[in-house]
Image (tube, rainbow, N blue to C red; front, top):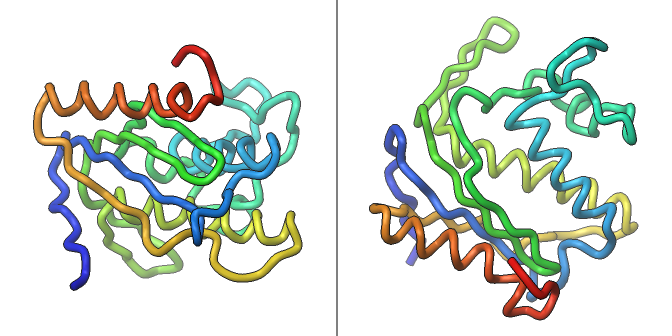
Length: 180
């Protein structure tokens, strides 16, 4: 039976997670973590090409992420629609906690209007782009993730606190760090 996706509400909180196919690692090196973060930043905040911009390109990486050439219209596309509250990138999976400010948006592209749910589109673009980059970097083919990402609605503040704790304590329990 297929998994039912939650309804997306304005100011709703959602826990998004996914893991590598067959529980294999999706982050093999520090550069993989940085690539995932760059793509996420590109979609959520965007990179500016101006020198005096508030969020210019990082000085240690004076280049645009791979997503800019592939999809220049996604640069900061979700910055007014979604806030990232918490995240955790583990070697074989990730967790992210988002607040959706605007559940649906319309984008005009080449004279057409595309309308989509914000959160699934954000995560879809993130996972596809990172999957392509991961496969290219590690000279492999095939799926990176074990199916579609999972999304769970966080209905109230006590649950929000519990999910945030879970996300932050995950690396401690796995023995990757001593403190969250």
